[in-house]
Image (cartoon, rainbow, N blue to C red; front, side):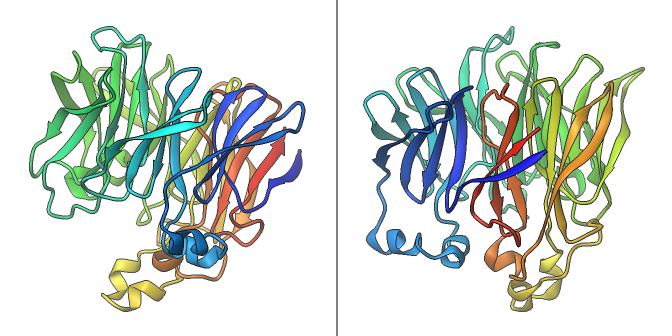
Length: 361
């Protein structure tokens, strides 16, 4: 394997095709043609002057969570971008954008989901609310209408969950999987049917049901656990006289991000602490890893159910506190990737912080 620092001080957002990626530098949006090596500037998202200045500092950018959070391609020409607590509809062809949605709670959804070809569901884009919600208030799922307006498609009742990590379409079973967190009975994996008219939990109430990323397979739902308190693993949820889960591969930390690469599944672990236990002030300066984290390294794990999994990359957490300057993470772009390389963003880690890495397999 060959590791290449692809673009410094940048964040890959999604694969537009095998030869074209979309990336950002702060509020600026670019494409990069992998064949010709051509970089094309598209446009700038609206940002206040002082925030633009912040983008020149790595630590200030991390402190204020500045930059494009996530993106999802809608069609050949349009992509949704989450930036500065808003969702923008960005037209790649004419390089223009419009504000689509202003987030009511939280700074961003953790994921955007494209639902297409699932029986019983309209083709749509949706996301689940992701915000600090220890009191377990109602949590909404929003869907994008054809007129570029958003509606609430489903609401989790008060007391059910804290927030939504991800919504996963499953064409094998014509259902959606909904991953929720974080603590006690809020941690769970749910099924949605009939255009969100029927939503029910499959497993809930344990940290090994707490997940952010999952992949439907013929054997069941392959997912990674996301807990700073307990040891984590890649697991399979399957239905055999009732829903059960089994361990596939032990990992060294919580799994927040994942991707598909050809026939393999790719997961990354994060480095984080149990900072809230340190108190209202000291939590901001905490650098001690949580009990569920085996080492101070973020890992990338690649493999499948037939051939097993292995660690293919690791990077050490830097010296800065978790709460103020973010967890150590390796983040993958959205979109299909059938090339010979895996692209990912490095954040809050010792080597190549805030750069795009190209890992040639």
